[in-house]
Image (spheres, one colour):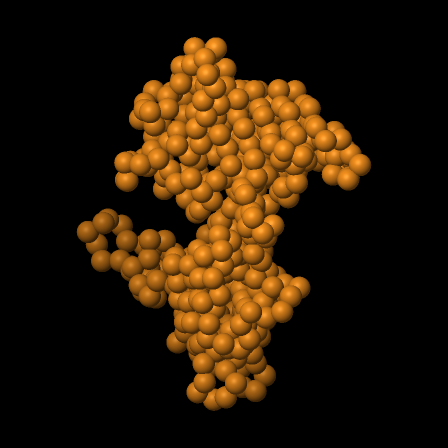
Length: 436
């Protein structure tokens, strides 16, 4: 493995951040100019064939993924990260499916590849997005820039600390063409490896000869008014103000004034539309108040889904004590055991007099022997009268799928539900919530 320069880079980067710090940062194979806000990195073309499926714009020299990348940069990925911070860009956050974060977060970077014909001719440049074609449209990828997420840090081989994953572990990505937890730069939309692999190929108009020296040029996305691309917003869901009324939505900046105060989904949509028109990326953190009846939550899930699908909102990981928004609007077919592709544990709540709620955990096993048989199921039930009892029942039955199918009365308060589920979510973070 290549030794990471991350720790040393932090010291240099911190010094560079000061007003009296150096104007230029020079690292092996890389030069960053803080005043010009430009980074130039030595690289070489991979010479991938036209229409080759390509998963990376840029990889490091120790990657081994030359066959599916446009170019190989000679600088360490962590040095690229350091240089981006040096010219004034803050690192964002990479995708992290385990934490239910499926959108890359960060400011945009314009990436270009520069070369000379035959190595000596007039310099030419092309946007990195134009080096790939989407076979569904027959056109180059949209020139929307790349997102400076920064690579995740992961445990080192000795288990005594962490390392910058893009330096140490495959695919050693500097700029990925699909969402990747361990890349410095990601695409500015949601798109996993499996979803995009068949559709992104090398553009025959920009295939460069193998090993041709090239320069990668990185610059921040122009923001004329200085407003950051990322717009952090809390979407707070409160109970109806009166019986029979609708849920009240408040949209506010975490440390600022409310943009919507006790309004509806249409009010939130108008704010998101304005942000989209201003070329900003709204990142929503969804927070449901404890007093909201769970029977009213499905429209919340549907509304948030519409915000993401039509208005460009990116949903952040749920904060502690909250469910991911998709829990509120599960596939109705999953109510039927016969319609499920797998059998997670089921948790059913019932009222316990005036003293609150009780629950039972069901472990379901599909016992059908051949595909032509009617589905049959073996069901074992276990008491889960308290959050601790639920945690013990899950531990006793083994980890199984990290999913819970929850069936709750519509009048149950969200706070009561989460008091039960909190301890269970350390191993079962994915919840499908049904009311009955």
